[in-house]
Image 1 (cartoon, chains in turn purple, orange, cyan):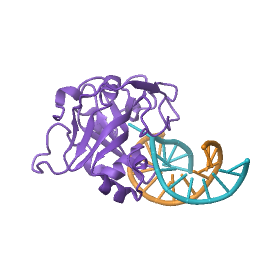
Image 2 (spheres, rainbow, N blue to C red):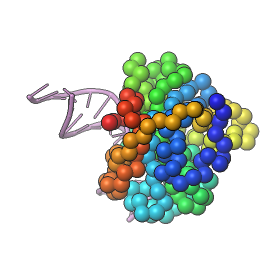
Image 3 (tube, rainbow, N blue to C red):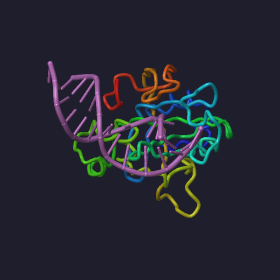
Length: 194
DNA sequence: CCAACGATGGTCT
DNA sequence: GACCATCGTTGGC
């Protein structure tokens, strides 16, 4: 399978959130299938970080699609998003859960558990398992950082899967909680919550 | 099984 | 000073 290019990411957040399901997130020797996502929109979405305009934290959301937006939450965890849409709009897709595929022993060490279902079944868990931090904020997923080669290069690989998708409201929000912008592979046991 | 709660620090008002 | 796109633990049944 091949890494997805710039064009794939350049679609509206809802479309990208659905299109990412079944694709594989690859980071060095680590690989996982994306099974749960959430869309954060540039318009009429009070739950979106970008909804009140550009700030130091959310600036990557206003940048080009296919770049990472990584932020620190609850003093402890990181959340990993992929910027979508058109440059300047301010929208992104939160990666909420992966089904572990390769590099499971390393994930188990980082997560301090042997249970496969508990390695990447939540946004804070998968960033721990993959060691994604603010260092990766604003990095491109479709071309390596100038100078650093393929090290630290997060990529999304195509996968010939057309999963059945279930939609629901997003998790953990106080604003915009009624919008059905969470998507997951129907019945998958690695999603954060049915 | 599940609901409640505390940890912990960056960001924004 | 309040809030937060979370998670592991605790204590109930």
